[in-house]
Structures are given as C-alpha cells and as structure tokens.
Length: 86
View (tube, one colour):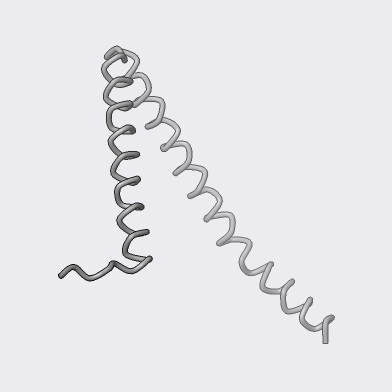
C-alpha cells in the first residue's frame, strides 16, 4: 500500500523539521530580546546604523572617483607591465 520513501526524501524531511525548529527558536529569542529593549536605545541604534551607512556611501563614492582619475595612469602602467612580460 505505502511505498518506501527514498533515503534523500527522508533526509530532506528531517532537514525541513530541523530548519523549522531552529527558525522557531530564533523567532522566540528575537521576540524576547526586542521586548526587553527600550525605545531610546532602539532609536539610537537605528541612528548609529544610518550614520555608518552614510559614511560608507561617502567613502565608496570617494574611492570610485579616485579610481576614475587614476584609470588613465593605471592603464598606462598595465600596458607597460604587459610589454615587460613579453
């Protein structure tokens, strides 16, 4: 009546059950942790993350601009290196 399940199917079912259990524990732990946080700490943490993101974007743009101006020199250096390698 019932066909025996293959080994991979059994392993996939076990992995699915373990994944669901781990996600449930993470959800409950995050809920407990977030319920303990105060509002001013949460707002300060969000402001700090926003500030870090702004600095990261600024430095990335600054680095891209410096690469764009150095592109001519590095292309010349690269062609000189290829000539030396030959």
